[in-house]
Length: 528
Image (tube, rainbow, N blue to C red):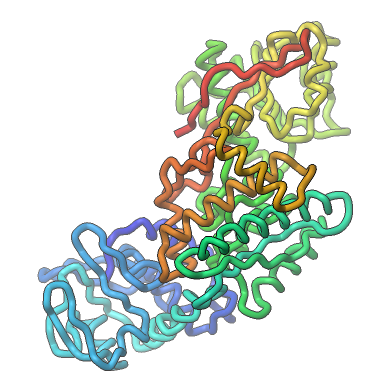
């Protein structure tokens, strides 16, 4: 049944990270959860991988190397790949009373429990015909077969969550009260107005887009509770668009993965960069870690510095440890040893001592990674020591005070941003401004609104690519095939099976301390 496909990475990482005991997967019975693990990861109820035999010679391989989802897709619908057209194996499709006729003219009657067992274990259809050579034969225990059938039946419901014949429900999580209320309500109104435009044109494949809202309240636990209620109540939602997730980015990643929930353009403080953790969250732009890598390349290529002349001053904590490792590894792959690395802890670290050590160790450029150390404070400490290295700051960590740094830093301060106003195409910009007018938005968080607009454009593009037969998994697969998508307000967006940042790279901007302005230098720097 199975062959390699783009779903493999997603399926294996999902299966390996989730327990099945006690109904651990949300919305699944224990039998369905075990069947999901077998279907997506090739792991049986024993915790081991059953044996699979391939081809007429009976080549033996573990089922984990050939899980069902690889060929038939995580939604069970099958999709052509490598000259093979795997069939739709959702249970309602298998048991159709009039049977099946395949592309190679093989035909047979409907499946039942016994003929399904024979097909999976012996490679024969209900009429005794040999299945395609690409279909392995699995040596499954009776309980594994029962669990697999239970999960195939569940796929019917899974495909329909948040979708009916006339509507697609899209959720968001925005602040409606407190200091961020204006921002949240602006995003909500913008998305509602955008959806109204699409719906006035007939929707997407005849379905109207419906926005449903949960409240972000600042506190991660309460915000997640509100989001969970939105997902569980009523008809649920098909995907999330522009949810505010500042402060609980990893929790959103985990929730999206557990629920098989596509999330587009979340509003975050920093991207969740855990290796292989993110399968369902699609970011538009680079975060601080990626922008630090852009600056690291600038230090190497334009400033012509070796790795030992580059210092990383990072915030404390596991997320920033991982970010620093990623930037350091990026430099090390280019050769020349490791950069200097220092952790700054507000109220605990002696900044003057850090500056003295960096200078003594031959630092020529400093990259500030994380929000703990304001560039102004670092600049003041460096000026006290009479030391003026190149100061490289990712945009999310560049406070407005960078324009007031000591004069000795003039022409030595560089900030990286994921996008610039020059990315805007005039017709699209005019369309965006008109949409703001339709939404009654006179002011608001400009960058967040632009990202929400671009995210809505991406959502509609992905829905069109997925087609009328919607499922969350097919939506993820559709997003993975987006290449060079032009939203008109951001750099082109590209995704694949392992990439979840659409515009991976950034721009370098020089800080002119004399004239108190920012000056873009050079073209877009891609990290591809």
